Figure: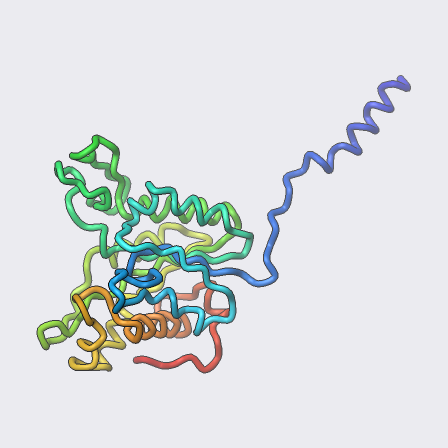
Length: 265
């Protein structure tokens, strides 16, 4: 009996060591950015453009780590392990902004599948790559899978719709949005607790409408997708304003906006 009592006491003292460790939480959160060249440092690497993610730190009070990379889609960013890389950096309370769409179109079932095109659809449809036979998932699947991983690490996720191409191209104003804007909105909604959505497309559209034809065209030095540093900065300002105005509901970034940010629409 004495042996049993000592054994029980030892077990009781050992229990705290078996408890699940509490994930470390930063004093203030870090915002991580996952996206393509329209968000990435140096943009399209052409010397004339930049991504809006490089300017977000001007409008928030917390650190911003830009993990966007040119030429990526939700599919290729996932398959290259870049979402996993971000997950390994997260602390509880951090925020991840996910914005894709510019490179997500195309036909993955084609023999010339570029490794970026998502399977068409809004749910759990799958396709088979015509190039290597791999399974291809939808835009929403890739975004929600990444978000689930981040939320499990104690982070929150903001799904952001892609920035628009030049809406004044040709001299007339267009409000037509690519399908990935709606896909992003749906993914943000379906993530549930820990997820939110910002219609960055609409926010920049509002800014371009106010800016007008000539000034907007001046922001696109090489093509209709990648903006000059001034255009990238404007997109960051539009993003911050959308959050301040709760354009699509509240996001965790709202608490960390700087006071006196520009109003661009």
